[in-house]
Structures are given as C-alpha cells and as structure tokens.
Amino acid sequence: MSNIKINDTPTSLSSNSFFQLSQEECNAIQEECTHYEDMRAASIEALKIIQKNHGWVPDEAIIFIAKILCISAADLEGVATFYNQIFRQPVGRHIIRYCDSAVCYLVGCEKIKNTLIYLLNIKVGNTTSDHRFTLLPTCCLGICDKAPVIMIDKDIYSCIVPETITKLLGQYL
Image 1 (cartoon, rainbow, N blue to C red):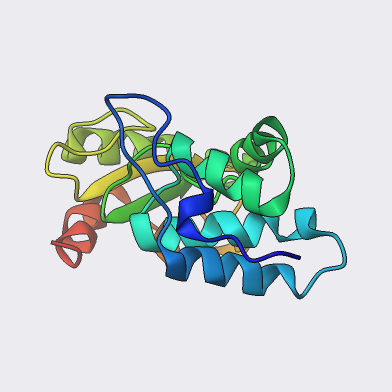
Image 2: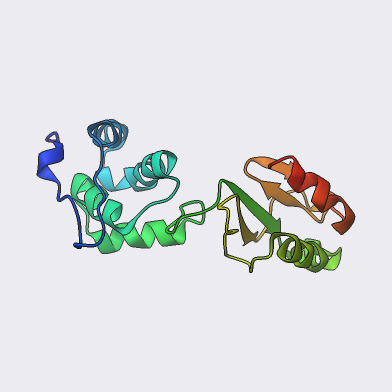
C-alpha cells in the first residue's frame, strides 16, 4: 500500500465548502488498513476516525477516505449511511437515543419521546439550536427488562419516566 500524502487528495468538492483530511487522519486510516487483508474492511474504522475528530463525516471526507481505501465513494457512502453510529450531518454535543423497540413501546417510550421533544423543542432527528443535544430513535439498547430506556452519549438510563427527564438532561448542561 502506498502512503497517501495530503497533496495527493483533493481539497474540496465545491467552491462553497472546504474540508481536508489532516496528515494524522490519513496516517491513522492507513494504520487501520494494515489490520485487514482487504482495505475495504477498514471502512467503518476510517469513518470513525474522521467522526472522532470532526463530530460527523462530511461529504468531502467520503471522497478522501474512498481514495485512501481504493474503493468508490458510492460504496463508502453505502457503509456510512447503513451504520447508524456514523453521523452524516452535524450533531449536538450530546446524542440522546430513545429506544423505540416493541418492549419500550409497550411500557411508554412514546411518552418519553414526546417529553424529550417538548423539553428540547426539536423534532426527532434534529439538533437543538445551541447544538447541545441531538435526538435520535434507536431500535434496541439491549436492556428490555428495564424499559423504557434512553442513552445519552454512552450513558444508559433505564426505567425512565417523563418526570425525571428534566433532571437527567440537567446533568448534560
């Protein structure tokens, strides 16, 4: 595998946007590729490297990563949009995921969702105007015996009731 240098990658896709991978990001992606026989297998890890540094994966990053991995941008976009932990648009500082699985639905996730929508003053999939919170549904958080459940960043909260959500959100202000 040849080393990709910054000069080898385009700097922008359009005149009104600018994104460039740092040399450190290129090196980290190349290092990740060494763990796989097929560089395509490093796709998710490469996307995670960009997201860790930027908070999300811009369109331009897809082009750069695809070039490094020697795959089409369309194939990489398919991975990025399939994997729900990769954000393709800017998100808030804190990601709130409410479980909307069948079990959580039966025990009140709709009330939890509606309380979050009301308190945050956003719709599902949106980010608050102060960029503090993004609200997303998730199919299952894996602790159905303690439903309803929400996850804020990596913290999981179980047996949630609408009355406790304000206090819970206060921990992230």
